[in-house]
Image (cartoon, rainbow, N blue to C red):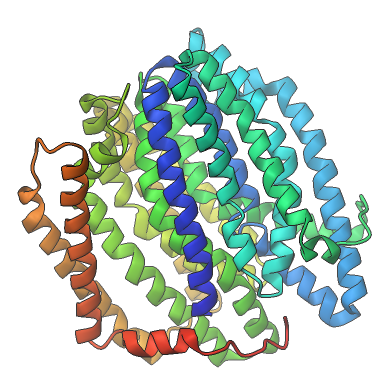
Length: 516
């Protein structure tokens, strides 16, 4: 499980790093203001769709259903089931894309009411319509990735999203070199989003995964209706962080540049959230599904315990690091071109508050698979809805007094509301299984993270305030590297992890999975 987790995490890390490069270039190209807010509001819709369909979300329904059909009726029946899912999802998303294109002005007014009566509204509608082809490609991409994950094949699905960012970076670089007008540049970027989705689909179709879904059919029979009744709530629940950001954007649209500040701050949150959260959704769902179906309580406890350790061990130090080093990180990554010092300060303040919600987001990713493995997608959906309401109500109040920072704090509060709801309901209904090893390691992980955070805080003042370019990069990189080394050594000293044993385990050949 850990080997698969690292495969997915490595692919996600590479994708997120390319995403930082992409967003740094977007900041330099568009800066903040009317054009940037309009583009990023439209792009937020695409990000919600990406999380809604991909990054482990569809696994919540597809993997348990596909495994059940394959084990009960055989490979041919499983391929036919997958073919119906692929055909129905593809046809449905094409139809939905057409409807959304017609209703786009209304949709933009709902997600960004502050744009009404201003130039941002028309620009956001135009950008969003240009991005819509991505929606039609994302559906079949997600189904093919889910089928690979169900067989324990994670490498291709982990690295295929890199194409999305590579295509956008190439387009941005061309626009920067051509000194394109900001409005025209936003249109070109929006059009490239659909092209990026097509590239990802073509890569997956060239692989064996396409033969796992044959024959291709559109169907709304009883099996498909039952599948979508499970899939839709699961997909909405799995994209909880993006729905919370949508809630924040709705309120932030009334404040100039606030959407941009929140967007760039959230990009930094998505790095650790992606590394941990996406891997949780991708790897943990099939592991828990097999354990729950076999009635193996020890296997359930082992999977849940290791997931909680990994989540805590990665999310907590990331949270402390982002809080302590918020401003130098933002300045290094985004303060270029049209993105100025004032924008960096506002983005850093928002980042501090968003980071407080990172452990909650990761906890949700670790808890939700326990429900998905039991074919319960409604409970995570209701928890997501509760967090959304909490975020909106608080954002209205705090956003009025504290601007983007208040909205960021509201998003963090919404995440904690969802996480607490899942924890309470699961403890009451089936009990989360945490083994003795996890109960011993978790406090030590917290201690190691706190010591690392204290070290970063003590050395933060040593970073040259006026450093620029390469010097700033070296200084900040050295500080982060020192924090990581200290944290790793503390985990070794406290007996949480043996890096020699871990490296040896990763080098050993994987045992064949009878379900794969």
